[in-house]
Length: 147
Image (cartoon, rainbow, N blue to C red; front, side):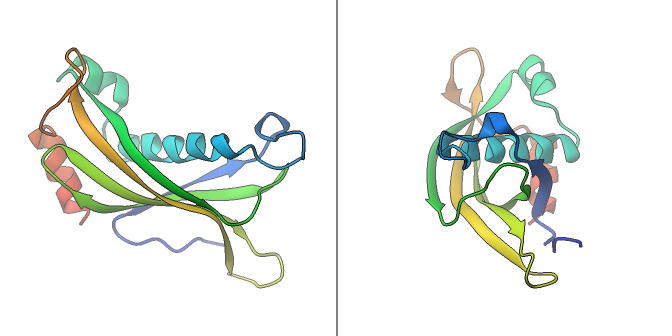
């Protein structure tokens, strides 16, 4: 069953392991932020850039400025999830994402249950000074092509 994608969207699969859960047997709330981060990292890799390379040359990093998240339904041990993002807006030094975590609905073929949704605002910074800086032109060109 394929998850629908928009041109400015990206998804990764995530399996829930025992280490991801809390004493109640559901995914610990902070782990959803880790899943969002993994998705953004894999998205960046998919468009041809790795964070370690960007740190070395041109010496930039992407840091989270703000997050808003809604927990709608719990994920549980062994669940197979889809973590996704959509690029909402690209600024000179900022990227705004809408992100979600979904699980296939076992009762309805092709339907997805929204478990978590949120927005993430990241900023491009000079990694030495930790001050906002413009997104490099080669990366900006790729990002703008996604919109």
